Length: 247
Ligand code: NAP
Image (cartoon, rainbow, N blue to C red; front, side, top):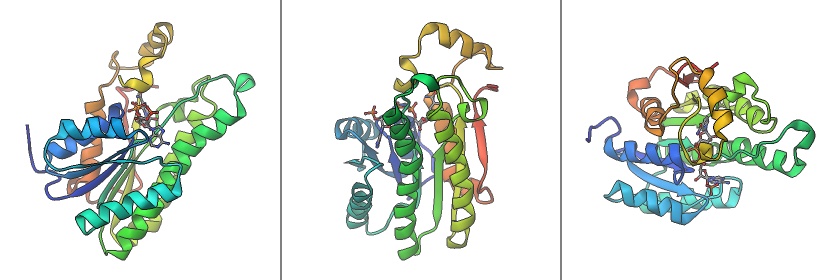
């Protein structure tokens, strides 16, 4: 099914080889956008791009590497003669352990990818949007665990709380350039990230969800598409929970 919510827009998605990023890329293409499909592993990005059909651009992008972030944006500008007007920061990782057992390097790694990666991509894409006088929308991804404070996620949950705060800061700083910045807060969603969660833990999580089921990546990308589109023209600095009522 194709429609025109994002017709003619150029969008950059990070982590687009994963569950939510891939569903978002598919949705964006269906809505008429051209997608710069990026992931840490180029094969993953290429697989997503293949699903989209048409002309989209798969690129390798490690969001923790500022040089890589800049070169990807340059490459996109060279190809399309403009920077993306939509950016979705889907790249994210977990490295779960209780605080007393947490490896310090895993603490740093999760903060680095989830928080610093989001910051770096926003910073460099917005610099180019300003240079080219392009307004648009940025969507960042937090998590319901940021609000709930899940045990075993002393790195992940704070990184996602910080993404939401960073988004509010960015919304205020970038409003004068015509750039809106919002957060989507997913609950538990069926993706490669959650595949490895043990069944016992899944049973416990299910009890926390009002709708008594897990989400699908497409249900997250619906909200991402809305926040990326002109339909949300008066929405910035906002956070939208898409969690089936998880608390
Ligand atoms: P996913 O399937 O694991 O996708 C995440 C993607 O990001 C993967 O392709 C991953 O590559 C990539 N990635 C990891 N490190 C990266 C880096 N340094 N640079 C660029 N890409 C990198 O996870 P998902 O469930 O779709 O998650 C998407 C976002 O939603 C994440 O921010 C996640 O925290 C958030 N979220 C997910 C859920 C959920 O229940 N699934 C709930 C709340 C929030 P590798 O596979 O090679 O690591």
